Amino acid sequence: MICVTVRSAMSIAQALGGRRIVVELDEKADISVLFAYLSETYGDAFRNHIYKKDGSVKNGFFSVLLNGRNIFALDSFGCALKEGDDVLILPAISGG
Image 1: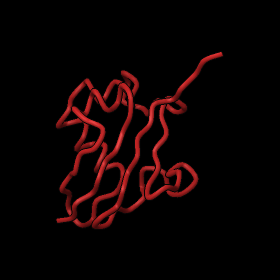
Image 2: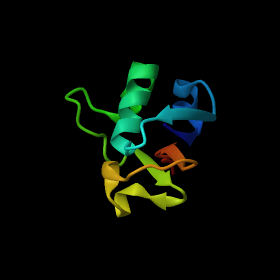
Image 3: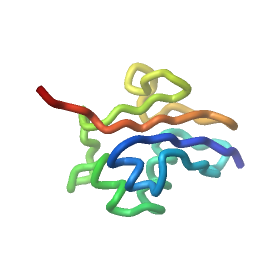
């Protein structure tokens, strides 16, 4: 098993019950496994920020950084996780 820190802000932090949580996952976990765990554990409060009703990802509605690097510039949800990784999930911010 590995421990991964998940940090978040604003509405996503509310859904996760705090700005920083530590999650224990299987050693072969990737971002998709982490998000499945978060969806199962925190239910619709988390899921509604990330997925559309049809289960597809809400592209552009949030950013995910793995150790400071945008996962969408890497292997997206296939990015492998390892012990001590830091995952930052941020909702999109708009305004004018």
